[in-house]
Each structure stands twice: as C-alpha cells, then as structure tokens.
Length: 150
Image 1 (cartoon, rainbow, N blue to C red):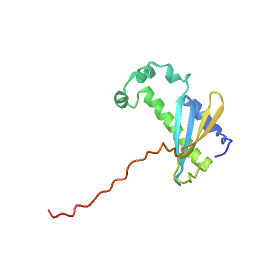
Image 2: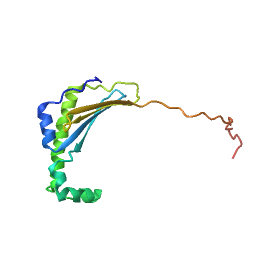
Image 3: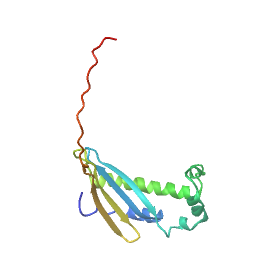
Image 4: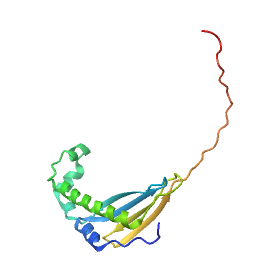
C-alpha cells in the first residue's frame, strides 16, 4: 500500500466525531488473492456517552447481560450509530484503497488508524513469515505387512 494515507472525506470525519469516536481503524489483510477489510473504532474518552451511569453499568456487565439489554438502552443506541459510521467507512475504504490481496498464500496487511482527536493517521504494514524450528532426527522405522492367513 501507499506510504501516504488517503485523505478522509470531511463528511466522514464529521460523522466520526459526532458519533463520539476518537480513532477508527481500517485493517486490510491479503495474501491469498483476496483482500479483506475490517473496521474498528474506539470511543473518545470525552464522549458524552462515557460520562453516563448507563456506560459505567454497561462496562461492568458480562457478555450475556449486554446481549439481553433492550435496543433502547443508551449504550446500544450509541453502538448502533457507531456501527453505521463504521459501515460507511468500510464502503469508503473499498472504493478508495483498491486493495487486491494478491499473494502467494502468506498473510500480510496494512493497518490505518485515523485519529480525529489529534488529527493524525498511523499506518503500519505487517506480514507473516515461515519460521522453522530446530530439526530433529529419528530412526526410520518400517511397517511390514502381515501376510499370514487369519
């Protein structure tokens, strides 16, 4: 991928900030002739939702308790809005980055973190490589066929 991160459209920047998000991540992965993207987001510490009792209670809940909450719960409403922003960001990423994912089967990728609090973008490339451990030698054994009648 390019060393320079694509500029974020102003309307997406505004939506990210309005949703109370600080950082959105665009995670590309390739290597087997197919590119994949995954979007993540991190709430802004100053987001209004984080100042509520509902947020504190939600953070203390277990997974099952969170799943049983009504869709009108303030954190669920906030999350639904954040999910919409992430979906728009994913569509923009597919149309902007042109990530093919071509390769020899070895995983590789690029991560872009757009920070709308500090107005920065962090980019990192990653790849997996084969790493052999020390070989061990052992005696060759042969399996013999039992030709006796049963």
